Image (cartoon, rainbow, N blue to C red; front, side):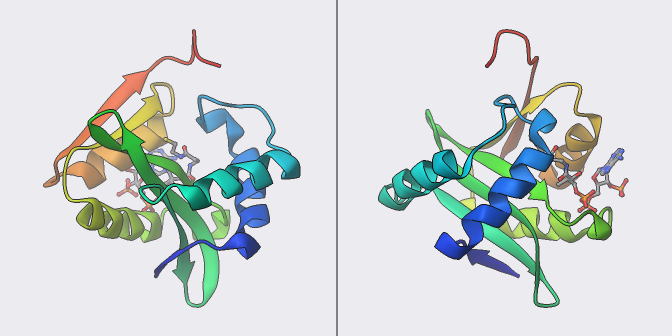
Length: 140
Ligand SMILES: CC(C)(COP(=O)(O)OP(=O)(O)OC[C@H]1O[C@@H](n2cnc3c(N)ncnc32)[C@H](O)[C@@H]1OP(=O)(O)O)[C@@H](O)C(=O)NCCC(=O)NCCS
């Protein structure tokens, strides 16, 4: 259900990210060139992992983790195909990821993103997982 992304996935992920940009602190549209640059850097960072979420052979979303100070932060958590919304599939993917990471996991969320707050609150139970609510103000 989770597989590490490869180069062929990055355009799909870019589109999903742009479609959901208001959920993220960095909310500018990401160009193909910027995405290619990100992926080039990503390949050099062994502790940075981005996964595709597959369901019945289809790519439906993505999520990743990377170091953040002494923590590991989740990032780019997106249900790309909204047809599968609220079916528990991203929760399953997150549960798998939390087991892979183990401990000291954080997610930084824009505090107005109520569905994400609820999503992480529900899924963090039983894990060493902190939710940091932040305001968009002051961030670019
Ligand atoms: C957050 C996101 C990945 C959740 O996807 P999903 O398909 O709803 O995930 P699941 O079905 O596994 O989880 C559902 C849970 O999420 C929360 N949730 C999802 N949509 C919600 C909504 N519209 N209102 C309130 N809570 C919501 C609830 O806790 C829900 O549990 P419930 O159905 O038992 O009430 C998806 O909404 C998304 O891609 N959002 C845009 C990007 C984003 O905000 N990413 C996180 C940035 S930090």
